[in-house]
Image (cartoon, rainbow, N blue to C red; front, side):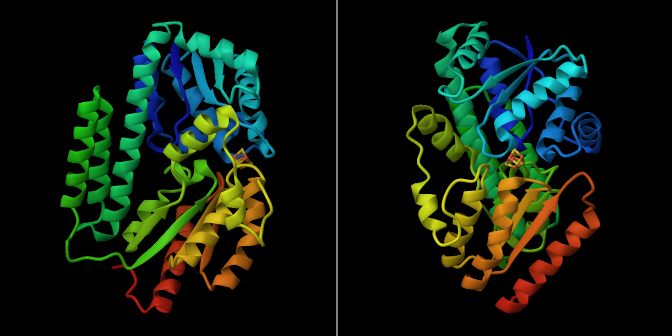
Length: 363
Ligand code: SF4
């Protein structure tokens, strides 16, 4: 089995480690590019969510590199996430790719299928390899987020534009090579130190802006046009509100035994939204409200065109903005989004907040 999986930010690092520890040959797809998007758009329905299109493009690129199996995370509605994996399976079948799809989802969704898929995943080395595979992947996942968090803090303070990007890429590369818990921890320490080395100790971030929205668009730099980096270079320290570590704790660990509750989020969104609307729609409203009350300077919501939960949240955010006197910018991305217009909107938003706060824009 030559196995591949979709890209989403740096998740390929723990994903690759997990599958290698289970004894599989892993085909990591190339990082998403315009070609990936074009491939996906060519073969996915026009109205499909942007993440689905990019993933299809990535699977076809991995197929060309020899992959024969795709590992996907399944999901539930009420948005289109509920039949995401099934749509992908059909597209790949109709194209005659021969790619097999394994779907990991919460056990109570489809117990028979998850048992079959997990059995195939463990086939190679057996269940005895699972604890170490999980441990290594978990440590690498936490390590990726620790490094990326550091990069968020360093970017508005970097001595020269682009140095933080290079330091982060090198740190993630070293982390990818690490194969023991000790070397993973060392890669984080060294990577964080290297990142801080490119920061000017006399520079301070001008503004703190939170990024909320649909998980894939928040975390995948190709799809969000390097949103975090663009904001960082405008002197903004980004507060990333979505963490895959937290998602695993909530949806995989607690969710698989029915213990994940959205009560706290519902409390935070009270007055605007009553409950879960799929995707991260509830989180977007709840976190915007929380962070606004905590004094964040502004919020950027990013969403794929036609993303149902985020469109609902987008319609609610102006009320939160008015109630808290909080600048909020909603950015909708699709395959037609142009860089120049995207950058202009970010610069205008940062300028507007800078004037309100009386800070000097762009460092
Ligand atoms: S959250 Fe949005 S982008 Fe993701 S599957 Fe649902 S509708 Fe599509």
